[in-house]
Amino acid sequence: MTKKEIKEIFKINHIQIGKEAMPMIERELVDHVRLMCVRLRHGNVKRLTPDLFWVAIGGDNKDRYGKPK
Image 1 (cartoon, one colour):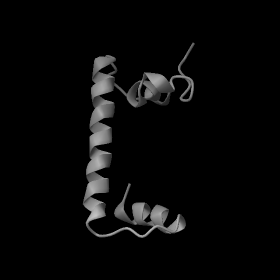
Image 2 (cartoon, rainbow, N blue to C red):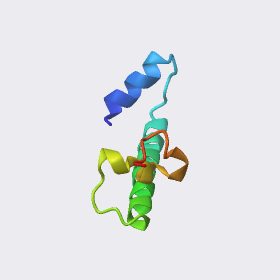
Image 3 (tube, rainbow, N blue to C red):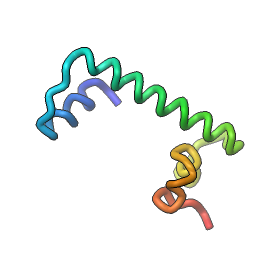
Image 4 (cartoon, rainbow, N blue to C red):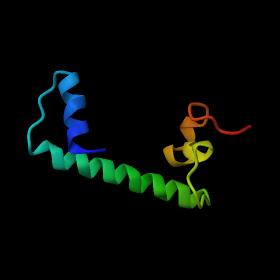
């Protein structure tokens, strides 16, 4: 996700974003991806595929992301 895409989302929602907030948003995105990797590692997932995306997001989202039955 680029800075431009982030700014566009805020613009669409009529919310101003200060320049000091952008690094905080970027850091939050990085932290989220790191957490996803931790979950994948704990789930012994070596390659993230659409079928395994629920593992990266967390166990509460199994139905939302189509956990195989």
